[in-house]
Image 1 (cartoon, helix red, strand yellow):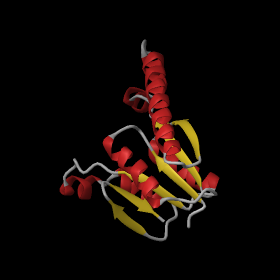
Image 2 (cartoon, one colour; image 1 turned 90 degrees about the vertical axis):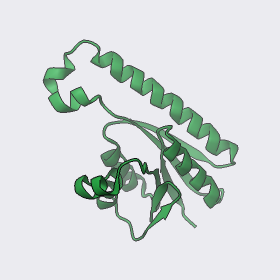
Image 3 (cartoon, one colour; image 1 turned 90 degrees about the horizontal axis):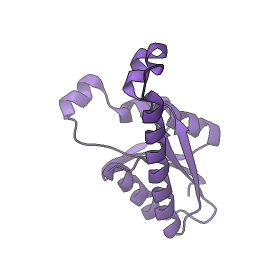
Length: 154
């Protein structure tokens, strides 16, 4: 059985599937479940860095996104607690893939559960790659298995 599990959650149907997968695994009472929500900076900030930060409304946009993700994190936390799991919520600011990889390293995570959108065509995933592929490259995992609309990295 796993001692430390990280579930990436952002409120999408795919990430709700990741929550359900965590519940389905029925981890024992000593298992640490870490629920991670990541507030991504607006694209304008990522692209323009310093010049765009001074734009009016960027701070409000970031604050609104942070509140939205805090609400989603609270909902995900409540769902896992109702299933009888002990959950440690984390709200972080940054890009999701590096944040997940950082949490895996920092907390000694043994299992990562994330949702996966199948909306992107297979050709586009192959041509451009996918968030899942990037994440798998960044975290140490021994085995990967497709689970419902998500994947598990072990």
